[in-house]
Image (cartoon, rainbow, N blue to C red; front, top):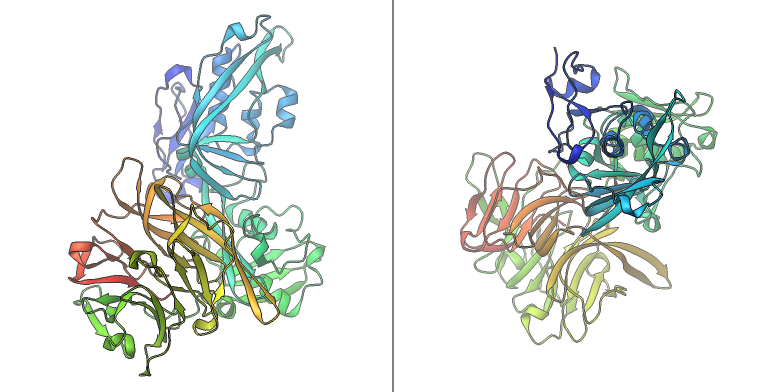
Length: 621
């Protein structure tokens, strides 16, 4: 085996680094790649793609390197997997090398930072030189590994270099004594080095886990020397990200960490992962330990590099605290009917609720559902089916009233659970959504009294949801609640822009009526200028329909933290007004494409028409 070497020439004297491409798939990290043993090392620029199989090897500064080479070499060394960033630190003064903490935060730019020429006139005594750095900042990653996106904004920083005595004491050498905090990476280098994983915590006071996406290193972490499995476990033990923390609980006792010195975790031949913990976990037992193990099982389930069927927690002395298998952890899942085949629903041309039987080779077949909605007794404008697929909530044709009806048995008409007083149909009720608790959500878009409502159990007394951000300048166009009931995806219009926001749902029981709030909205599609529709597509993934500034409509997968990748764009489709995605990838994405009616996208195929006339496609939720 071997590997091809690739070199590219960089502009403006960027520093040198060696780039090795995998020639044997995923085996690169296990030693398939080799460094070229002859030929010159040529300057290269940041990686052009987010290919995780590209390895970058940092190159130490050459003797008598000029200031430009020092700055460029350091910028390139930041993109490598060099243990401890030891080579990158060789470009720094001793003091700067000791104080630089690359693990504290990451600044993500659209491309590798642009380094401008130093202004020599800015330092008349020639004590040093400052090199401006610029770019378009799109996100930061904090010390808790949380990705925090923003609309592209101008990034301006600088790197300062000075002369210091050389190692042999016979002259002077240029080194960096002032630099931006943490790492500064172009998006391609960031995606090559880091990957998204979901940590799992319990919704406060409930037996339902919530996904908390974070970013870890694709391979061994340069600072901790931990492999991806150990990094993931460590991130889970550190606790939830700051945004999610107010709404979830971790079952691990405060201060619980991996046993000192653990950098590698591997399963045995029975796919059991044994996780040694410190003394803080020694007293955990019984139900608390089971829930701790469940958090680990759900978290490790997102790692494709390891198959974990069972987790055993070990105390500080190596004693077994408890063990739990995947089947036992299932009781804590947010979606608990995953063995059931997923079928979408839609409203047909006669305003009746239909279920769509979709097959890979068979003809797609609409089936009328039982009850008022299936018979057309209540003509529908939009619909949502509960996650147990026993009831549906439908907004009537006028958009004024929200009804709930069984879709498994016949029943008499019921009074509306929520009513809007808005004059125009477009200003009345949004499409509804169910959470995994069985509560029903809908927005009243009345300009005179905009309101988000939660109906406990789908039939209880409607609760006004506290939304301090909702006012004259904000209007909820549509919403989708996560299965865990802790997060809500909102399409919100402010002025001329319609954006996608993720809000955190917090519940308190004070007296007889629950108090519910949606707080701390964060952008989930910051690069999209206009968002048309959204659907959940798993624990922390969304399917979003929208446009970037100056672009055409596109459909793509996004993480709830706003991160994305070049492979997330779905095949193009015109005129999409709504979209529905399954919880698992085995079922198709379904959309309303205007003139083409209801269409579906099965894994590995293109869009295919299934019903000529219909609208409001939904999966349960």
